[in-house]
Length: 325
Image (cartoon, rainbow, N blue to C red; front, side):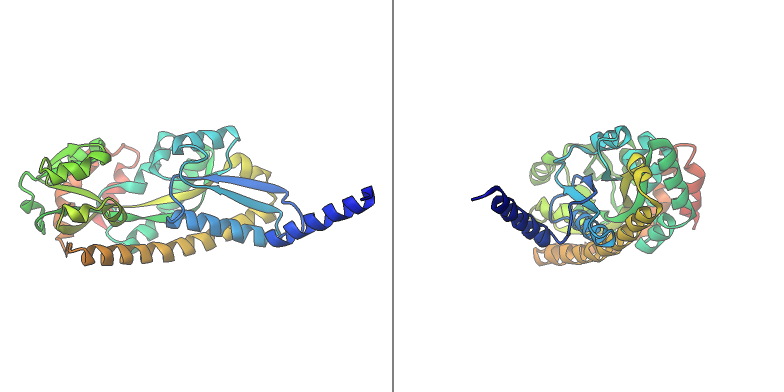
């Protein structure tokens, strides 16, 4: 084979691979997006959607490589990498309060009465203030927000009112805010590693725990708990973010493409999120769990003082306003 023939063969092979990938030339820029979710999670699927949309909008000049399962690093490591310029994107939320105190607003117990209420805050004036502070203090730019499943209380009897809790021994994460809120509601909260919860429920060390439906399902808590009390005590969101260093390298046209792709990804994630909530509830009901409608207003009113005592002074007036809405 002559050099000319060999070169021709390589050229054909190269063209074939680029046709398969859907772009005519190699990307000018490849953004690395790392996150903690697995491949089935709506956050991951929305991240992939973002990459597809951005590649289409930029004719393949900008591609996105998505790294699920902390394969690019843990959340704080990725944030640090974005600040240093070694990572382009991640999905992160209230962890950003280490830099921007207003990020604590992403997950305040009983601050958001419904998904619509939360969406209104995240996409409104308060959300704009949070994002501006994150950009300024953390050098990371939120470009979309994804919903998180609300946390609910599982148990072996219904707890319609906080007055029913009456010293209930329950597991909570090792977060002072969670401990104080559940104490104020009348329970006996016990911080415990998540890996110990199933066995502790099984042997009666604790009688309850609280988590989103997806975790209740994946941890098989239906095998040791009979009720899901729809306390929905924490509604929260999380941001799809891009490093300010990376953002600054983009032309105005490409920045607009990033925002358009992010908006598409946000809408797509919301569809997947709602479906996952419905699927998880149907699964748990099929496994014998009873869903209990609770007096949410009574829970919120009783928790208010403990919540306000645990939030920082910068966001306390905002939280008070949210409770009063």
